[in-house]
Length: 379
Image (cartoon, rainbow, N blue to C red; front, side):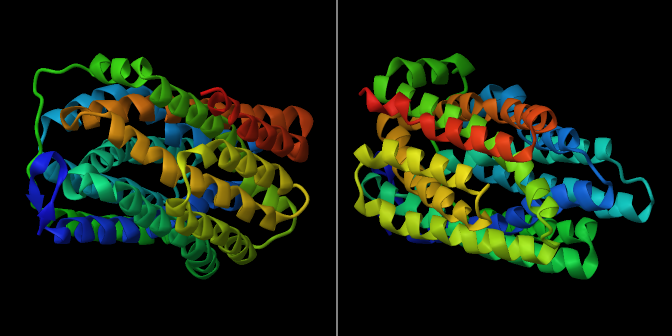
C-alpha cells in the first residue's frame, strides 16, 4: 500500500492492473490504426479523400462528446464506466469482419464503425486519465506517465508489425478482431481495480473549460497540443496511402512503422529525466521528423521520439494544476480542444493531397506540426 492522491491509501496493484490492461489494449489499437485504413485502401480501393474522411470520423467524437463525457466521468464511478467502454469498443470493431463476411463492407460502414468506436474511446480515454491520479501518488505521476507512454511506444513497435502480419495472413477485416480481443482483456483488468473517487454530481462542463483556459501554462500547453495534433492528423491520415504508393506491402508497412516507433520508445524512456522546458524542442523535433518521411519512411522515428518526450512531460502539468474532483472535466476540456482539431486536420490532409499531391501535403503537415512549438516559446 502507498499514499494516493488526496491523502488516500491505494494499493500499487491498482496501477499495475490499469497499466497492464492499457498496455494490451494499446497493442490492439495499433493493429486497428493500420488495419482499418488498409481495409479502406486495399479492400475497398479508397481515395485520398476517403482516407481523410475515415480518419476524421474516428476523431470526430472528441469534438461532439468530449465536454459532456468529462461531466459524466466526474459524476459516475470510473471503474464500471471504463469496463463498459472497453466492451463497447470490442463490439464496434467486431462489426467489420462480420460485414466483410456478409459482403456488406463499404467506406461509409467503416466510417460509422470508426465513429462508434471513437465515441466509446472518448469516455474511456477521459476516464483513464482521471483514474491515474487516483492510483498514483502525486510525486510519482511523471514516472507513471512515463510507464504509460513506454507502453504506447512499445505498442507502436509491436502493433504495426503484428498488424502487417495479420493483414497478410487473414486479411485486414479479420485482423481487427485482435483489437476487439485486446479490449476484452482491458475490461477484465479494469474490473479488478478497487478505488474510490471524489464524485461531483453538480458540476458542469464549462467548469473544466474555465480551469484550462484560466491558467496560463495549462492554456499554452493545450493550444500547443491542439495545433500539433491538427497537423499530425493531417499527416497520419495520408501516411498509409503514401507508403502503399511507394510500393510497400502491408508486411513492410508494419515493419517500417514498428522500426520508426522505436524512436518513441526511446523518447518515453528519456523524458522523465528532462524538464518541462524541453517541451517546445520536442514538438519542433516531431514536426521535423514528420516532414522527413517524404525523404525516407524511417524519419517517422524522429517524429515519435519528439511526440513521446512531449507527452510524458505535458500530461503531469494538468495533474499538477487540477483539483482532484475536476480531473474528468479538465481532461475533457483538453481532449475536446485537442482532439476536436483532429478530424479537421485529417480532412485538410485529404484536401491538400487531392489538390497538391501526397508529398507536398506531408511536408506542409510536418511543418505545421513543428511550428506548434511557438505556443510554448513565450512563457
